[in-house]
Length: 169
Image (cartoon, rainbow, N blue to C red; front, side, top):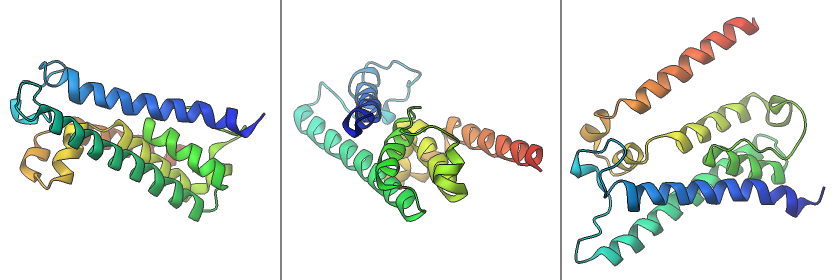
């Protein structure tokens, strides 16, 4: 299979996830949909005078965070010994929480144990609440602690990790 075709699927997952996050920020959150009754969580106000500058700022921040997380993830995977093409595709898959891989076989055989940890972190970042991540990034610790979902998610990951490790022994 040609490399551009293999690159196309993770790239579509990655772009689609970025557009989904944009939809949450620019459409669902301002509409109060999705369980966001607290107006202080809204990152964008379409009725504000500076709405267009808000859009540019938020899209720039989103692109910077999304691209930098992907590049850092790919770099870490590559440093752990993953082939560069696989590292880029796996980082895109992790950040977008997609499932497409560019190889056949077991994931741990391609990325190793350290790479699995990096992929787990990328998947967590990709699946985490964008408002929680924004609160952490901006140092709003009190607001970040009010989100229960990421902590439940982390607890579930830890529980499953322990359960799987006990089963593998």
